[in-house]
Amino acid sequence: MAHTKSGFRNFSMKNVLVLLFMLFGTLHANEYKAVFDCSSGDANYIKTRMWLIGKTMSMIEERGDKANFVITLHGSCVPMISKNYDFIVKERDIANTQQAQEYLRELAQKRGVKVIACAMSLASNAIDKEDVLKFVHITPNSFIDTIGYQNSGYALMTFK
Image 1 (cartoon, rainbow, N blue to C red):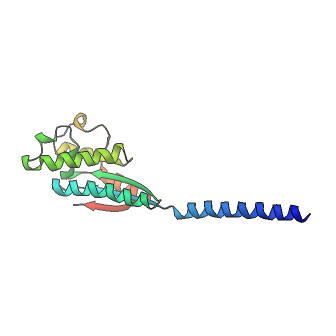
Image 2 (image 1 turned 90 degrees about the vertical axis):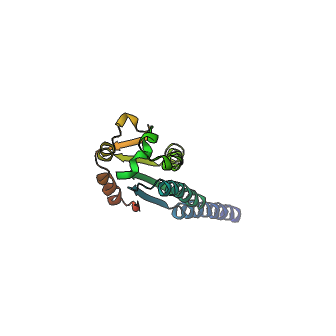
Image 3 (image 1 turned 60 degrees about the horizontal axis):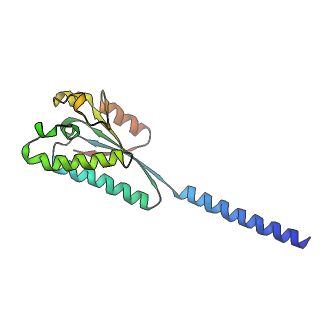
């Protein structure tokens, strides 16, 4: 009988330790939710912010946490999502716009970041919806989306 109690005690202790480990792991993992709102027309600034979003995601994931990010684009920020941005951005901004677009493509296609563009801003920048990169979601009004994400607990990060 002592053997059974000892075996039961060891079995229970193992289960308790496994459950505590699983519970600690679940409690420890945080989800960082943010909506990055870009209206800037400064191609170099946009490029650095797109890089920074990726770096921030990596740092969060290295800690064992999850990053759930969305990028909303409107105003002067939308030319970088055009397939033919070289026709609408200044010549001096082409290299920075190209790099920003590459960072954005990687964030969307490899990192799972949702990218949303405002249809009103596309129209005001004379960008046809057919000219927008395929991974970009077009919405009638990105302010509505941004507000919705904030109401769902996403932190607002602005690029102006």
